[in-house]
Amino acid sequence: FFLWFGWYGFNPGSTGSMHDRATANTAGLVAVNTTLSPCVAGLLVFFLRAKVVSPKLLDVGGFCNGILAGLVAITAGCANVEPWESIIIGLVGGLVYQGASML
Image 1: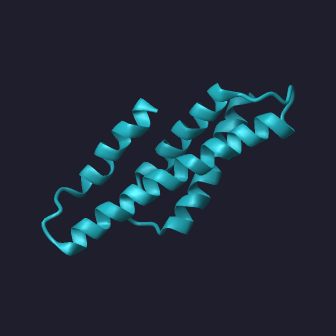
Image 2: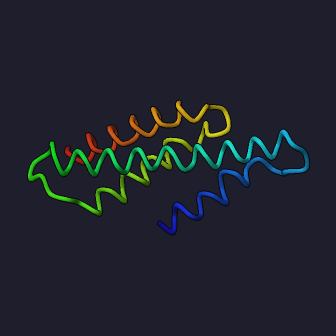
């Protein structure tokens, strides 16, 4: 969760400035996308490990790693996607993480 908090300084801070309405709106969009993608990725991994993947346990470590996967997945394009697209990016990031962790 400390990393997630730091990501809010990194991603919206990467807009460079908030001297007018357009750049402030961009920073707001980046913050929303930085919230949605890791939420979806973390919850997806948590659900998959609790209900689908054996041994079907509640895995808090997997949840935290899913959050990290969602943060990594959204970082590059967070200013260029809409919030609904960041949800899809979070789903893909969570699926990629879960698949890779099963290897």
